Length: 152
Ligand SMILES: [Zn+2]
Ligand SMILES: [Zn+2]
Image (cartoon, rainbow, N blue to C red; front, side, top):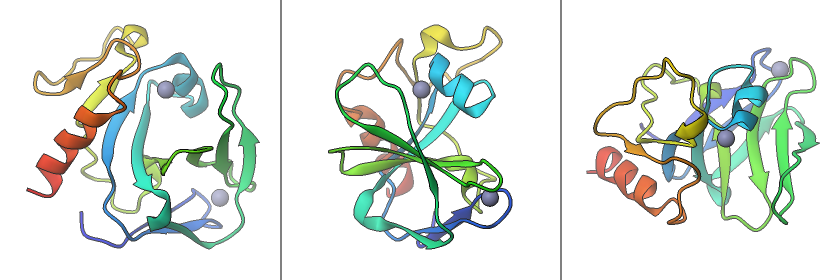
């Protein structure tokens, strides 16, 4: 995908721009993502914090309950409710909810995490990286695979 990337919420009040290469794109099948998206899985794009900015609108913030110590904030549009990104304190990247990108016709995740709670009808690409729960390598393999595909 060519930079800068832009996107926004369903009603258009919130607009954002990505000016640095995303680090990876994966699907998360955890029960929390299923509930948050009101769907089968979450589609997350890790974007360097320095390469992400809001162009328009003011996001509302929801503190996501977690079992970890770090504070995790969900950014969403207060008008239409679209979740835009998750921001965990201390992490160098935001987790963008990738369906908010304008250019979303070809958002193919390089891997799937938390597949142990995936819907029974999901069929996974044989080449995709598959994790039963959270990746234990700090998302390294997911980032490597994404870079190999996007920037080769
Ligand atoms: Zn909106
Ligand atoms: Zn999840």
